Amino acid sequence: MFHKILMATSATILFSFFLSFFLYNSINLIAWENSLFYSSLLLTIVGGTMTILQGGFFNGIVKSFKQFFQKANPVEIVLDDIEGKREYVNPYKITFTLALPFLLTGIMLLVISIILSWSVST
Image (tube, rainbow, N blue to C red):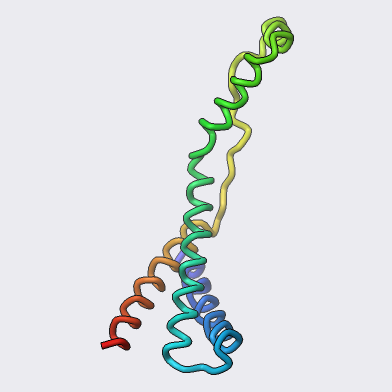
């Protein structure tokens, strides 16, 4: 886990150097700090989304939609009663191995970039 966090951190810092060069055509402290903020914010959003999907947050919504559409079609209700398919099976189990490293790296670099921004501006 520590190895994945270290790799994600180094890749994000390297990506922020390239991003600052392409966005601002120079590499200075403010341009690098801005691009570090952007890339860490993107990493935090991606890691958070992966964590939410992995936790099964949307499974209840999917189940409700399936039940609604099954009740809207009376032919399917009769067929499901005959076949015995009334129980709900959760086929949407997703696991991401990089969800927690992305989230932790993004939050850590986001806090570092905010502290850098505050120290540079004062």
